[in-house]
Length: 206
Image 1 (cartoon, rainbow, N blue to C red):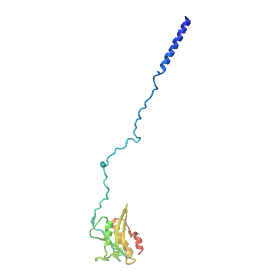
Image 2: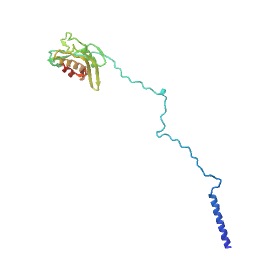
Image 3: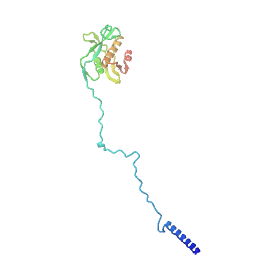
Image 4: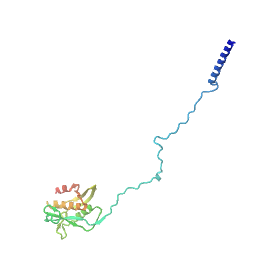
């Protein structure tokens, strides 16, 4: 009895092993399992969505830039003439014992006061100023205002043409007439050139 019981127990254990093994082995008709890859996820560009496109016709156009309009001014200007032998009594002292005398012009039209004053001075080709006894040292010269250059607080008056003088004493007289006329109109010192040369260079050649 004991031998038969042990034999029966061995058979039962062997059968249990076969049953467990049969559960782990795939059936002969089943094929290998496959995994269908899913479609790749769509990602936005690193910079985020691009800007929306606006039709050209809908874009707001910028108006062209224009220079501000400078309206002309109608006013008198001050120009300077020479009182020979006055010795600085009637105005600023000029070389050779003369004075520079301010004279108010009739009303003129201008957009730049320096241009207007110099233009008025250079347009006068009378040697004597009426019955005043004042002399115009520039009466023989043929000068014109080419341009007035403004850069910050610096003002430069560019003149072109020919400069004619009668003698050595005319050098300080011409300088006084041009420089004082320009300075008074600007309210500050104005640099003056004649044909690209400074005023002192132009006068030193005479």
